[in-house]
Length: 278
Image (tube, rainbow, N blue to C red):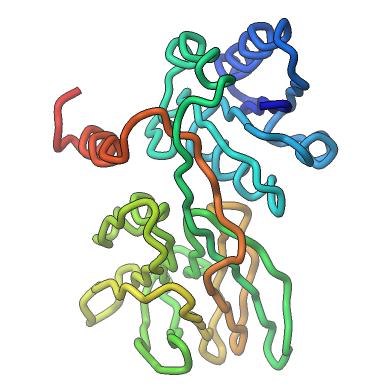
């Protein structure tokens, strides 16, 4: 490795200390090392090109932000858990400090996770603003107590006409996030399928549909309806009747450095969901 970045959640003092201690341990080494807040878009844009590894100190949200921030550069991510859940992180700060020399020396394997690309088409428009997500795209109701009417198509075929709280289009990574909480399936992290899960549909079962890689999902808001769209939990954008949210597999992918065997994913999930004891 020649260049390592360190990013941290700016509202977590523990994450900032972890990042600074990591930098102090790396500074004596013959490396180009940079450090920036996960919310400092300007610093990341300046430093990300040429970065081999980005160490993310925080929770899953910090890792999700980093995965989007490094596009289109093939930067490998290493998550250090200082959050609550940590599905995307593998190490604690003490584990990171203990194994830092191994990491710099190239120990570990690369786990590649698919991302999705979303485009919001305003009524009558042929193109719209595009975003990438590692977890999911959620189209949901705009107000508490009101459902939203929408249709869902996959590659031009209608798969659902719902009045519901919303619908989740998730990656394998997102299969352990919001989609899981409403009964969606868990996919292997390197699977490239896409999950479509309705949220609390009225007078209909909330069954998920798993679509193959490359499928194009379109969610169309019915006339007279109001809704919102959220990408990886980021600030919502308003939708109106006639708007379409189009989702497909992104040409970009997230790369994670893993120090344990592939089966560790099931151990992490089992412990987070209380299937296994710590």
